[in-house]
Length: 449
Image (cartoon, rainbow, N blue to C red; front, side):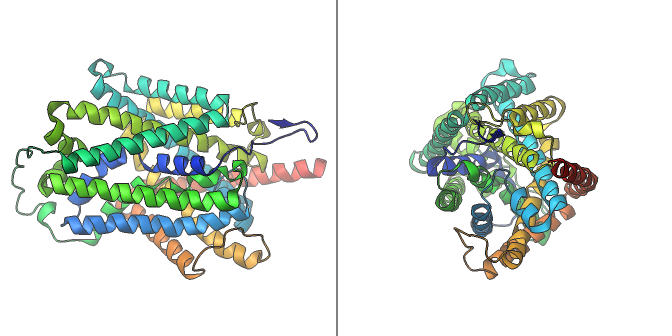
């Protein structure tokens, strides 16, 4: 929507609490929850320890939301976490966070599209070999929805999030309350297998990285602060409510799996939910899980397609990306930024694999959070009079805990997956000179006005 008096583009202030919960809930619940419970147990010696890590993951997300709530309601501008990072540490830090955050969203869209194509091929075998094409078609479907406008994207997000939440609740109920036949016994593990090994720091770190990846997406509501009718109230509520809801659902899923399937079978299963449902519904369980997985992935796909252009729009508005990316279409969508995001996502979808793309996403997800944590402390000192509709609970202790957790997690990603560390270093190396050039361009434009 264009303001004719100023000649500037403006986002529509048309979103509320329901959308905020849906976009965070929808981003968190992805295909990962179908796979991750078995992988987590494979790195840990006992089910109670795994449940404890799932609870810890929710606590980690809540202390992070406590920080992001203050930051994004104090500076309620489109662009996400790069906005407070730029306000706290300057242009280079802001560009670095915006760049890595946007790349993470683009990679997420591609990975989700590939996953949707793979699950579609399980449902419809004749699609095998065309998984990337199916994923690209789904990307284009959500591109069309969001091109029409922010309200259309919001409705799609609310509907898809509600549908996949209901699907998972039904699965849990089926596993817990319907009679089932036990799955065939697993082959006994070798004497020195990980399943029988005591807990180790490395195993716990890898298990927690998987859990962190499944919870990631909870900050998504904050990316729409400028489009929310009451960001001071709705942004914190959206994040806290979605995290608590997802945590309860994840605990229910893990509890149902542990109740219905022997631990040894869960450890070796790539799709533990399908294993559990097969004992209730028989041979059609895989197609049911595949259909549900497509539904689950679609909600994540729409959420990331909505978030990515907001980051690029914010960067362009602050002079850190070409100005044409600030153009807003009549429906309130950053149209040019949407096209650029979709184009790069499609390129990754056709040239990458799910595993290759997913490997580099973890560090890109935690790095912006680490800088956001530090931004809270810097802004509290440098701008004490800044209006803060929400003030972080337990300051400075709880924000310091969030900072320590995110720093430790980033280090663990670099230790257990060096490629993640290389990706972050490369992103930093690329961003510093580009940010310097953008800074000179911005200074020149300001001088010319």
